[in-house]
Amino acid sequence: MNELSYSQKKYLFAIYKLCQGGGEAKSSEVAKIVGVSKASTAVMASKLCESGYIKKEHYGQINLTESGIKAANSIYTSCVIIKEFLENTLGLDPETADSDAVKIVVHTSEKTVNKLAEHILKG
Image 1 (cartoon, one colour):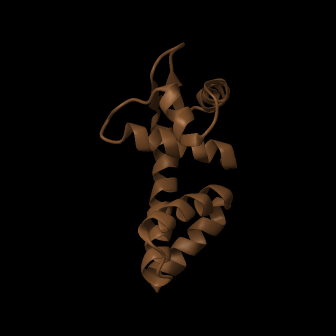
Image 2 (cartoon, one colour):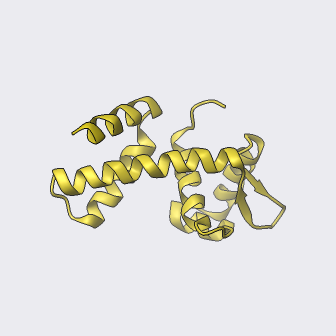
């Protein structure tokens, strides 16, 4: 699979957070987290289905596939590492560190995020 786009990362991350603990996500919940309309969420859900990252029945719940879980877990893990760096090394408050870590992860290439995470873990 190709590297995920900025939008795909945002949606997968939102779905992952909603599905933690084995749950399912609703399109309306995803739309709220991502900050878009339900129609935009439906379009992206279709793309993510075609790419094999999620399963969704028409008007049904959204579930991550195995490849979706792997991709979202990678995004989430990188986000946690970067959040810890922003909080503990740079001294940002937890809320700002969390928000900025998500932005860094979804707007940056996977290669750069991995290198940044490696650097942080070495330090």
